[in-house]
Length: 52
Image (cartoon, rainbow, N blue to C red; front, side, top):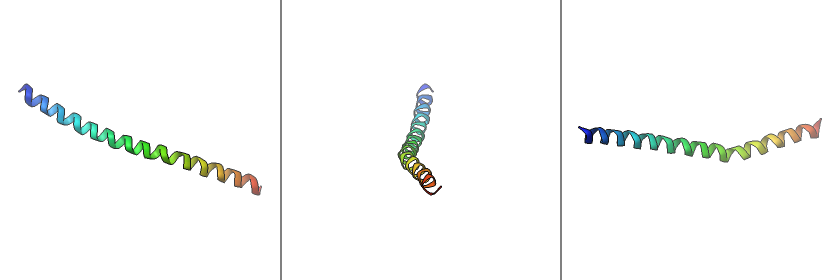
């Protein structure tokens, strides 16, 4: 009984870890996109100042 519970717990944990790694990869993708987004924003604000 204890062993089957342990196995269940391990499989749940591994599923949680795989979800977590997916979440981390999404986060890192978002973080790597962030500098580009910031530079785009700064470019658009500098263009706005240029034409005003």
